[in-house]
Length: 326
Image 1 (cartoon, rainbow, N blue to C red):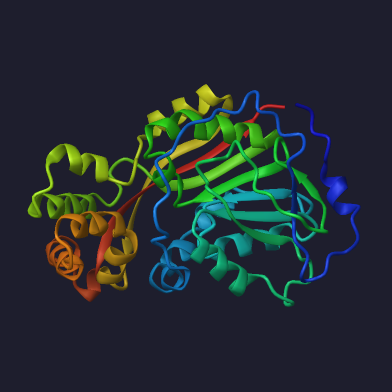
Image 2 (cartoon, rainbow, N blue to C red):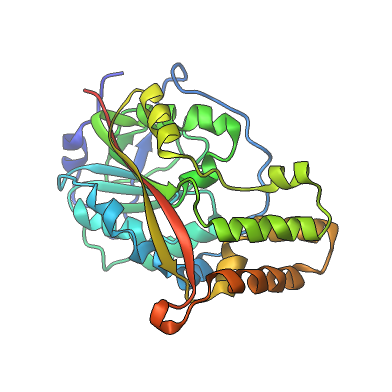
């Protein structure tokens, strides 16, 4: 579908005030071409935006290499899928002062924290917006009103960006069929997908400890595999999936990045909630005990001396730059 709303449409709007909202045009979103799938019923919001920002600050701090792959013009539009606490999304907005950035996240707590922290009168361009939206459902646009300009959902984005999110979305087999083709349809011709997420071997020590925790509480193997919340693909799998979706792959590589963790307990509690929830289902009231169990196991594997870097988890990052052909 041709792009009927170019950069100039956004620029031609009057200067936005600090309270301006980005608007996403839904009228010309075709149902044909987008791939739909049925996701499991939504569960409670297990994220806490303030805790995430406090306990996982290293995620934004170490995002420099993937941000470097994004080279926008000042007027470009950027869609951040899984914007979390908004720290990285805010940095992206500084790259496009006359453009627009929209951060999507499925967590109400994350979105509320991001809005409170990163959108205020201190941002003179008013080019940043955070929206609560199921990031596995990219065929349907969020419904938002606003005065900065209209961004078409289909072929409205110069860049789709995502950091530390796709391994959650792609965990569902149906999403592995739909996510990348739908991202392709969101991009303008010539637009880019820039992303980084967990690849094959990511935090293997933690995965082993979490799965052992489930076994410790008597959860059978087939159920343990169902509980596993992450999909960490190989570079070969990702490259093939991108090409199948129509992308020209410019970069798709695994990067081993041993990562210092300030609080192992906070890391387990914040990112391991799916495993901890599963334990509580079979052993009510044992969540704290389960956290202790995982931390004790992990400490033996990942704690080093201060001279050797302290507590370090084996992060394996899959970094991607892929282009939609013009």
